[in-house]
Picture 1 (cartoon, rainbow, N blue to C red):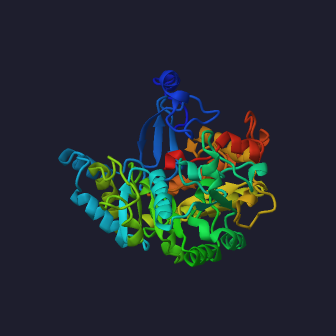
Picture 2: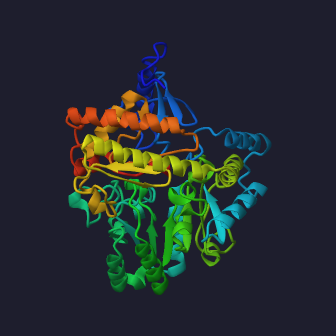
Picture 3: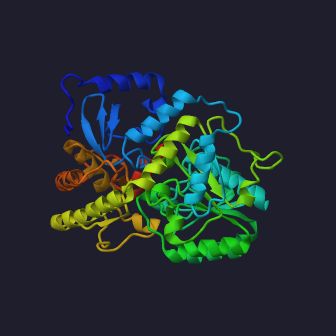
Length: 471
């Protein structure tokens, strides 16, 4: 892998980026794709664990579109299935196809909470519909989300993800243009705080339609849940007649075919899934209790409107079926879990050798290093813990990794991912490059030229989270 541009293509990226700026606002089609300090990043090719830029530079990719391609980019089996489906079956937008039925049956068999399922095109749509049907079912107004969790672009949940310290504890919308009355109908609680959940239900339980949660808030890296916290959510929602929604857009498939609910043994009422079920193709799903799912207008006369011309697109469905088949039949999770543990163990050794206080955490194929003095040997569990992270060093060393042909997204608190296409040799290179990159970043003051990244608040403003690309 060569991080440097090819002599024959040098400058091509800048020229294309300039063209993009003329016709695309900001030059990119999602808010998290324009990376400060990386102008002109034009992706020209992907394959396996790597991508190539228009300038001819090649990188080993640990970002991977916020994680959906668990099998690696352009998996040949998935690509073949999608192409074959596209050649045989166009999208009608009416009726149903055999593939849609088969995919729904497969998801219901794999995920504990799914009795019935509907397909969407994105995870954001799935979470939107989950809250809508919860309100339709309960006749209630309020929804509960947690600081640090991201559930898509829609107004009810577009708040309190990566928040500056002075915005924690109040409403912190990630966008202008949201009606105040919509924000007021969302209660924001600290993640992993069972007592706060119980207090909230004691005060508002009769008016809470739904609680939505990422069982592992991966949008701020990897905050692992206390089992008692998830159990409390299940107990309180059941007691109050509220709907418990697990947003498994990230945790579903990557951590196990049954999602975190299978790992934890806590079964929600509704589950949302995203494009990981199709190795990155534009797919999503919402499923759960049959009585709730029957409230959608796909059943004539039902009250909760549900539509989407692209829902169940034949090529996307074929990609999902091929992805799930490969995950069932090949040792994908064994491979990525083993490499993930190698990475986390190796990183702890690297930072110990460098004398840098860190908390290395993650689960399975996900890893992240927080630069947090006093947290050595401890696992951050709350968003408040993450306020101690040195955002400048976090972003700064990732910028330095680019010089070694390694791509970890240089934005604060972003997690990294192992895919089935990564190898032990890739892990060796990652560990070597990380040691060199951190040493260089430290020698350079951590975040030399990173205006806004030296504090948590500045980094929050710069990244203003929304894993839009992961939705």
